[in-house]
Image (cartoon, rainbow, N blue to C red; front, side):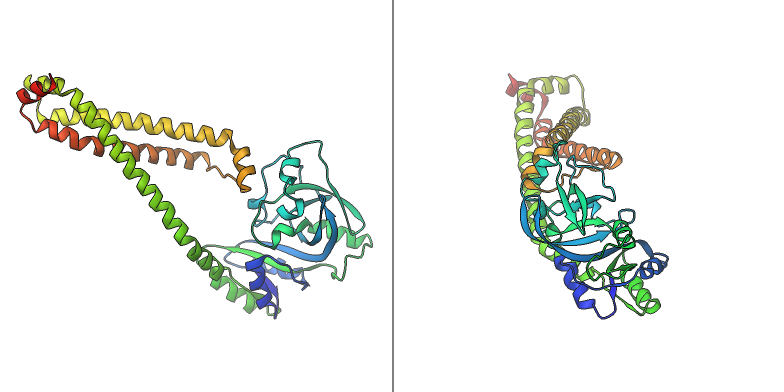
Length: 346
């Protein structure tokens, strides 16, 4: 994040809380940053005055932030996938708290329309942001180009200077954050740059116990599934003792019996894993709206290539689990002499 010189502390607080601060710098700072080596994307934001009143039947004080919809890469991931309306220069996007608890349901209704008067101009609420736990939840976002047009037509928008911005959000390649930060401060002395590395490290540290718990639960589920599969295959092999004994008595080697039974277990695992993965995808996709409204968070599905890769990985894990679960009961049967196996199977 790039801010005017001397506002580094405010920028760090902004990264953590998402609250806005009234500082401004020339727009050409953004134009100079976006062409620097190592900068993947750069998007400006302009902090306007706070709107006090009612937004979507919710009373409060709502900061107004102008962003560039063409270059933005921070708001788009938080946009709800409810119906809403296409974003235009006369549209606004509101945070989850600004919209109220039921706004996410109302936007599904095409006949629902919420309007808001900002800077003596009427805007239509087009989309809602998912909860982020920061000040963004109470913020109203509008098109920065609309702000420029209103200023040129004579509208007074607080104390905001013309052709100014408040911050530039910069996206770099992984590991290049510090290099780009130093380059920005060297070439643009009127600006200060703050990285989100410490914030990311703090979040990852806080999420580590939850991640460890999730992995532990997955391990427990896999262990229980393995034990259940082992019990099931033990019962199946016990029922087929006579068949296995006869197969051995007719000349089949231990290796052939192993291969035959373990192939059956692997095929069962493959079919079961594929069917389970497909059923899970169908259930999640069919109930994605219900899940989204229940947890108030987006349910993101991977791209087609990654989804196929994940499905294949799950199927292979299921195959491996079934083969390992079947190995012990198969081994105990194969070790017996054929006539004993036939007698026990009678």
